[in-house]
Length: 426
Image 1 (cartoon, rainbow, N blue to C red):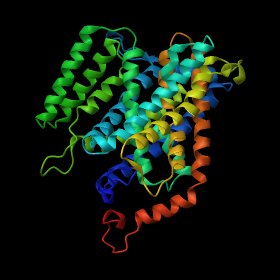
Image 2 (image 1 turned 90 degrees about the horizontal axis):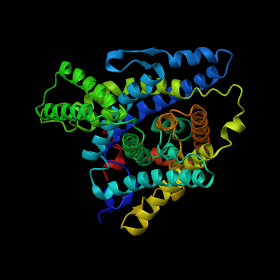
Image 3 (image 1 turned 90 degrees about the vertical axis):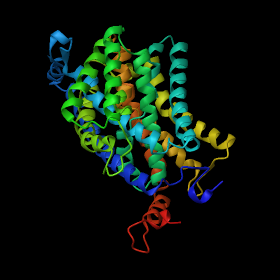
Image 4 (image 1 turned 45 degrees about the vertical axis):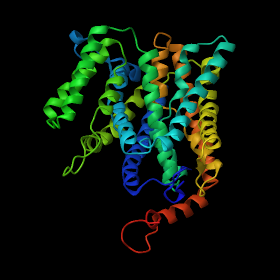
């Protein structure tokens, strides 16, 4: 085992090239997280003010071509359309991780993949246990499964600015795998009906997209109509339209050819990620977070098995699943924790994984589409659980802030002045 290069080490520092890519992605997500929080707060205040009816009217305002069955409310456009852009970026990030990043090495991939799976399974099981025992609504088991990387990184921007890059990379990889799991759950369990012909046509166009990528076609005027057609067909098939986004992302070429400055995935991520983080996700949060509590007490809205299952799933289930599976991976394999970290640092990241905002709100809407009262309770529980998880994670991060500052100084030190941190030359 070559420990000098981090083989067999959990949460060791990534390569210099991977670090540069990660810092760019994390920067976009952090800005998006701040905008997401602002949008959510504005929506919640507006929905419960004297102008709440105006907020509801805007959310329910319908627009789009009826002939294509796309005469949707603005809230539906945000959930089905704007989040497809978000999942396209997530697909690009996952493709990068699978081909060039931490998931390319199966030994290193085992930890974040296992942690992501554990972080999805534990909250779902807790939710099911609470709702089966309490005669609640088991259909909502998917709500506490997801981690919102943008919200989590916004917390890091405040409480964990010096968190080691290895842990940030782990959180990002965990969230990307988590997103893939969530979109799979949405596609299988939360889609409305199924129509074969549009689905077959969508698959055919996806194959065409893949062939165009292999043929090194770069004309945007081919890809934009193709992507819109794929999205429209997936929506018409009954499968949730966000699946189109992640599928297109995963089929995009991520390796640059000789003489090529950057790959198509890198170019698309550079152009689309700021739009996704700066507009798509905050706009969805604006329409999803406006839970109308007028005439209803918060206590009564949360006093049901659905809300309790969501809160326990995110606040307790997420860190238990993430940290537990990471520990089991270290216990039963040759992997060991990086010498610069303690398991309490992994617990802080596990708590951050309990911030399940964007995708959890989406699943809550899909699960209780015909039960608005239960859906409002579920969405309110997501908001409360995400805030609780963020506060607990912040406390854990603040307790180690001095130590993290020391690690960050070591990671950034460049004594020979060649522009490359010394830790990457050892």
